[in-house]
Image (tube, rainbow, N blue to C red; front, top):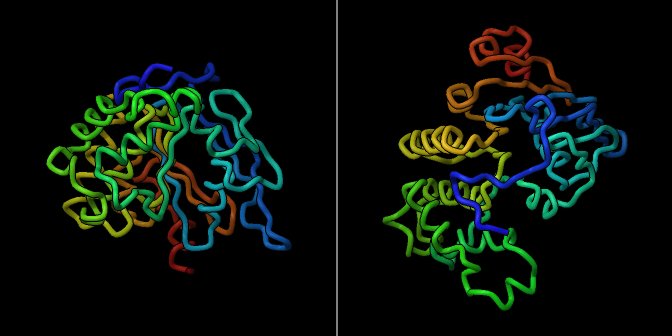
Length: 263
């Protein structure tokens, strides 16, 4: 497998009418609790989709059903027309699906560059190749490109544990892009980030979307961040979609306002 760069997304299966992700009637129950109830939506090539809703609306459960952390009770997930329901997260990674988590996944004792190399190694060929190939799996050049793109050059040799929380968030996002994914799911990227770093994070996400055509789905509680970043927003409440549309429309939707004010 050739090394993917920020300008060379990983190739995936053929798309269906430009749909990168299709979520079809996904439901998830835990005993008698229905966390997600028949959710259906599409995400198209190059789109930045926001997924919002009050606490307990089912956002994280839905994300985890899409990403293989949970198996849906019913329904189907397709990526570029291929059913991926029930695949493990590692298998989804190899299909070009990246993600970030609410809790940072950086390794504090490794440098910024080493974190990026480690993030990319899982996508570089067989285990045998990783064991007996170059120590960096040939990923240093790509790591340096991601460092430059996310403006982390002055921190490249610093241990991740010594970075500010906002800088670690940038690193976490950079790690998600090490394999050049076509689809990235971002779980509360703005959480705990100060306003200055938040503006930098948003600008970098918009830039990589434009440069690579990468498609994003973003769960976020920071309404100003998601409204200014995303081109379309889906609102969940009690496990169901209650609204969908551009940010300006969602802001004024009475059902959305009621869902937030009622929690």
